[in-house]
Amino acid sequence: MSGATILMLVVGAIAIAAASRRWGWPTPLVLVVAGLALSFVPGIPNIELDPDIVLFGVLPPLLFNASLDTSYLNLRANFRPVALLSIGLVLFTTVTVGVVAYLVVGHDLGWALALVLGAVVSPPDAVATTAIARNLRLPRRILTILGGESLLNDATALTAYRVALGAVGATVSVWHGVGLFALAVVVGVGIGLVLGIVGAWLLCRLSDPLVEVAIFLILPFGAYALAEELHGSGVLSVVAAGILLGRKMPKMHYATRLQGASVTATIDFVLETLVFGLIGLQLPSVIQNLTGRDPGTVTGLVVAVVLTVLVTRIVWMFPATYLPRKLSKKISAREKRPSLAQVTIISWAGMRGVVTLAAAYAIPVTVNGEKLPGRDLVLLCSFAVVLATLLLQGLTLPWLIRRVHLPTGEDQSDALAEAQAAQQAAQAAVERLEEIAQAELPDSASIVDDLRNSAESRANAAWERLGPQGEDRQETPSELYRRLRRDMLNQERTVYIGERDRGRIDDEVLRRVQRELDLEEAMLDR
View 1 (cartoon, rainbow, N blue to C red):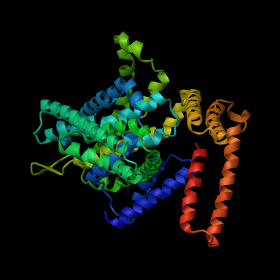
View 2: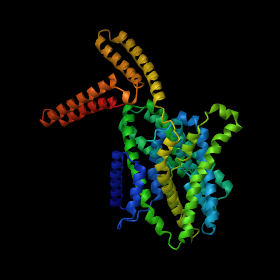
View 3: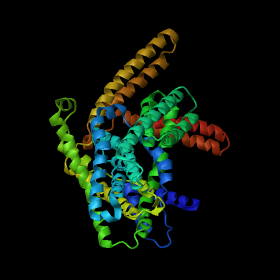
């Protein structure tokens, strides 16, 4: 792709995403549909995903940013179900899809390439899952399980993919594959933890936000590239570094957190919009590779693979959820039994995405000097699975959540916990203030009173959020304060801008004052 084409894609994707957000439409799904529609327009260049760009340029920052927001405590508490999905389900799907594909068109694929297809379509995508699930207000445990699965399953799938692809050329045995998987996990996690520890040590000691944000931008690429170079899992390396750094974020400089959040949110937005737009645009390149294929056979294979991917997850979920609790009293006592509604939602939240397509495109055209038959079928099935899961599951998931009457979020319990913590924090802050005032500020009673009132107001605002909701809800004192203060800040800005326009203050003065006003307004918007 030329630079102009890439620029047009980015601008178009951002414009569509902006319109979707403005009207409350599901942005990832709109982008996929727009890409599909655009692919039929005459004159549109044939755009084929470059797997290296996706796996080395797009995946690391998206995985890293998602890992930063992943709770280590919640992930550790749900590690068993996450492992069952990210390892057990991926391998189960790989084998099941491989068997079905071989039974449908065995002579065109062969066992090895059929298993390659299974590995390619087996992992739900971190980008797709996060983008679609973030606005559904799912219970935190479901979000943790889905997020943990989508972050970790790529390592299993890509390792299984390498093993199956090696079997196509008869260069990898099963036991060699097990060794590759173990090496990928150990090396990947190890490198990620080492880089995460070094990065956290630096970030907690530097006081230059620009340098610190630059480290955040570079670290995921370094973690991925170094792990892959040493035959480890780049995915696990990025995830391990991200989770560790996310755990250390509260100890870093406040400006680093503010600027870092803005930068990573912007990167996520641009990359996600581009990725989902590119998915739809792959249709022409997929179709043109199918010349000479029997339409009936191709259709049968696509339908069989898509249905197998959808059904396999459902078949796995219910026994994997409830059977261990029947067999182990320890698991039953340690973990709360999930409801049927929760299991149903997780079983239907298996959206595939760009990693599946990138892995499919990375399959070599020739092996041992001979053209690889069946590569075109793997590409088509991968594309069909991505489309079917994104559009079918993505569009119906909100309806299903309402249908099974799944409780949404933990807003009330979060508000109560925040209010209790805010009360303790305010009390500790006031006690510290009193110590300093008695020792150093005997003649500054008014300043001490203002600071005390500020601390108490924060605690009161947290308790106010526990008040009535819905139509009976009235504006709280803290909300009234924020509304009035915003109006005052806007008026102050108007005056400063007018003074700048009349030449009474310099632009540099305006920028300095405006930053102060912006920071105060940002605090009001919490």
